[in-house]
Length: 311
Image 1 (cartoon, rainbow, N blue to C red):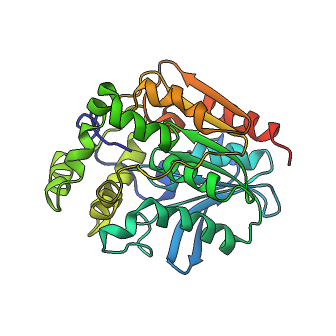
Image 2: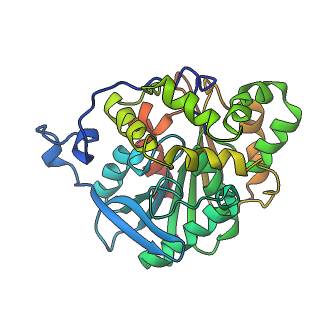
């Protein structure tokens, strides 16, 4: 949901990474041949065409993974490979605004309601009746709402970094620590091109714990015409209010004690917004970008959670 360490320290990209999917994977190493191959995928919906990356057998249990800001579907590279190796079919789309084929101009089009509908539309397009849902940062915000709204189709939820929006909105209203941690959002919500110029002029980006080659790829994508404005429109369009529906599906929430954007109050209150089986993993020594900074523990916890949900 952020890009600065207050998202200011985050916007420093390491320049000169190799282009293309191979540049952010581990292809070319001896180990690469042993890992499932990640392939590009296009998902056609009424809203437009979503770009995605995928791996795993077509008949495997389905997992949809939603990225955050300022990343893309390939944020989940390590999780996609781990899931595919266990026989899951894992798909990570570039969400609206990040996919050029779904980049509306209107700020209103980036309200979470539309992104939540995208989840159902992508599942329909993929032919998935039931699926497990995973989200980080803005992807977690979408996933919390989608899991509550589409409980008959979402088998399980794994949310990373961002609390249930009922808890998060309450923290924004009442907790000075969360209000301070979220001040960067006020900057991001300023009219274009102010925030866009600030971010692009501050580059290159550096996200703590994230491979510099991936950071470079994210920055190149955001530097394309209209891309960063679309990504920032998620902030301009949303205040996190109005999403009080509780989640009934089995839920794992991975949070970080050191997350500079998320105060402990919302993390602790999230348990009040889940009526189904719930587990909080509050990780130590890790920042906001958990799936990339701590890929091994993320994989372990995610696979354990999925294995615990049979229906």
